Length: 175
Image (cartoon, rainbow, N blue to C red; front, side, top):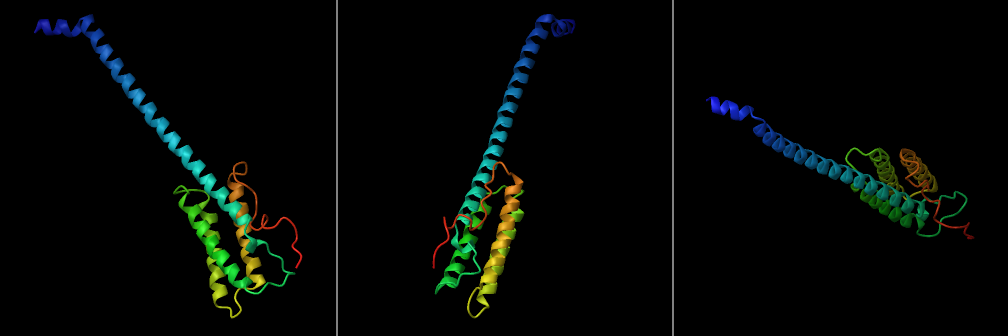
């Protein structure tokens, strides 16, 4: 029994245990650092993916001619149907952007409100005999532009500030 006590208290045994403890601590810290680095990388990639999706959505909406509202212009024949198709396509763009967002993203509420505005416009248009009116389109454009401004305000340095319809044409079109 005395031999075991002497072995357990000898400096040689303590030196061996300290080496084992040091190796265990180094492995634990290395693994923890690796896991933390992986988590931070995935989080950063999710933020970047989200910013790309929102920027692409805002640029696509800025290029949509349907949002280039001009109340003084008479619509061309068939414009109401093309506008409805454009708003349906806008809903698809909004849905695609929403699928790229993080679960608790700051952009979810503006995206949700954009979708609601588009759905309301389409529903309103279907119950009008002549299709959508200029005032319906103007209301939709104002609502979507307000949400686009909110999205830009979330990360002003990283999100474009182009409003829907502003990049549709480079100059006033003569009709």
